[in-house]
Length: 157
Image 1 (cartoon, helix red, strand yellow):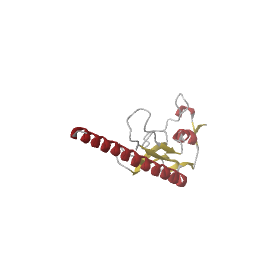
Image 2 (cartoon, helix red, strand yellow):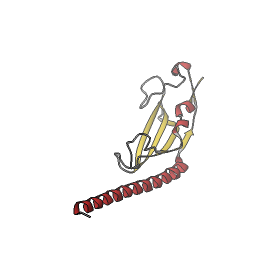
Image 3 (cartoon, helix red, strand yellow):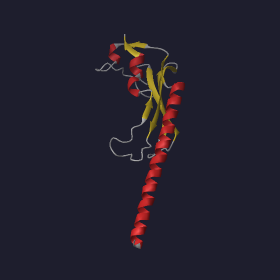
Image 4 (cartoon, helix red, strand yellow):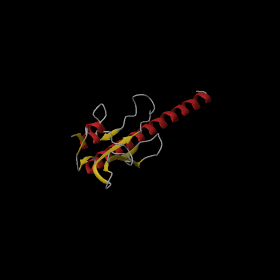
């Protein structure tokens, strides 16, 4: 075997070994974070409704969604939604798996009282082929699609 061929084979072996290590450790970290998502979700994930509110029909859009502003309420509405997402583990920038706590609150403006709260835990990133369409799905707990806090708090009255 020629020297160039031998060095090429060694370089190929190192490249394949490096890819295997990257894949192995990223999948191990994802599994660890997925377990942490489940554990934290069992502790405080989900939605808690402390009060429900009936609003005049004019305070809903044409699809029946309440016109609740985000941030501090400076309108006639009387309620607002605020949110906060915290990275609990992992890098601030992609790539790499990270664990996020996403909290949304519905607040009454006049006394700053929280009348509802939703907490979702998310593991995002961590796939070694991230960036390729269809690869890189995360894990959520609970499912955010079933957690429309505004629809649970506000109704037409």
